[in-house]
Length: 406
Image (cartoon, rainbow, N blue to C red; front, side, top):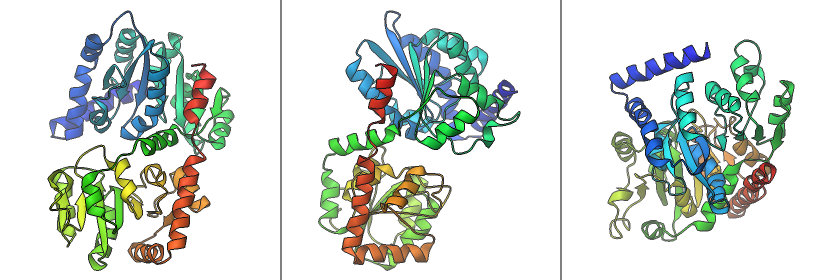
């Protein structure tokens, strides 16, 4: 049934591509190139380690592992695969690996061809990537495979007939490195004991970004000592809350990083905001002086942009769910998010330690911004708690390497 579901999924992707869905077209084009990429890049005399991630978020979680392996074990070459086209586009020129490509659709034939060509010495699947046929083939070939930074919130999805696929997939891992004790307890209830609680490698990544952070001259000129509101991973539902507030409350500079960077989205933001707005790719030292808002319309800048925030807002909380809060929290700035945050254990932990503030609607958003602006001591305390939370949770990468023996 699982493999039948994969074939149905392939058919749906092809239909979507036929009707012009851009991501589906990118996915199919990428899949066609996977084996050709491996044949071109791989050399039979080398030993390869395989990292698989779903998307851009998983890529950020994998980077501390990849970069440590690259630095400490030059005898290994590294292959990185993606499920999501957006993640692949960000990482396709990543210099720390020897090949970047899409993971083939998880059919038995695709898996045998892919793994037979790659022949990895070991494999790492980041977070909740559980492709049954792939994991089964790795286990059949006695190739060690590790789950990294996974989180399990309940055991319902693992029970009954429907949970059979999940149980089989999880039993195929050589070891699972999970983020918290609850995940370990849930896995134990289905007979999985090869589990270690090590935390989230994403903490290691954001600290590295902080350490390597450089000034961005255009944003330095734009901020120029003003109060700056940074909206990261911003979605339409978020913009419907915060843009009207800043339209009516001047005195702030805005830096908006949309979650999607297509021209239609950016034009919609420009239309909503009634101040002077400049796109980053069109900004100059001259025009940013008079601008009230900069829209970041290129990839790869979000983590660095948060350093300019007097108040940081992480998007998604007024829509489908808040995005990663760690990139903002590491800078020790006060953090504001919307009400849809319960799926994020990092957001919940920040609330508990006083490192984040929740706004439940547009009115409450305005009240919280005013409170953080007026009470400087309180605002500084929120930022300090956020920074301390990050520093207290680094080290997952080192713990994983130690347990594996790398």
